[in-house]
Image (cartoon, rainbow, N blue to C red):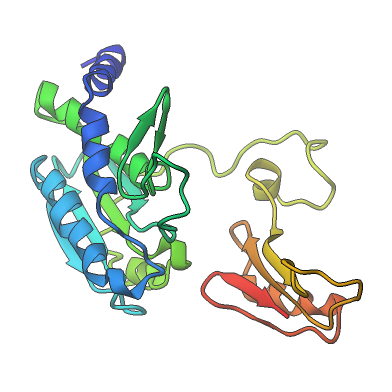
Length: 274
């Protein structure tokens, strides 16, 4: 099966509406990891959506309890075609941020994929159900054509990424054998022009990004009825993005240092300051 033929089959799968139907079924699961009432929905997404889809392709699947938060399980699946073949790992997360019911504009719903022109709307349609749906549907297209992939595949799906991926490191350590035998090809690191990027940036920072602290929400005083005075307190929720090799715990002391009277704490992967 040529690369061109594989791309053609994937295009037909999309144009015929099959991908839209697949994504619609997966988006219909209300998988808000930040909502404790969604415990059953988080598990059902793995058992009733992902597992069934993978088993139809000959994958062996199992759910793994999260050692940090039992409400946020993991799924590990694998399809092994030969010990002498390369192994590919694909990752995804089935959880979403809060649905924000009632706050979508007219005509849109969080748990329904709705098409308007070339745009599709739905909670998780892009992040991340749509992304792992693309990967898995592409594998299905290859299997439908030639019954073999020509390589081994391992799948890791978590349900807590929007909560900071609690338990992910522990699961990777506990399931090291199940997730091993992955083939990593290429050079040890990218070749970068020595004049590229700001002085002092590591190779990873030059290529992939850098550490950032983003203010997601900020409130002080009474925004709905402001007065002509400096409010005595303020509240902010901030989000840290960082490259590999950096620990968010090292950033936390630096946040309140700009104002000695402020206090900060860390819920999940975010940062709150007052």
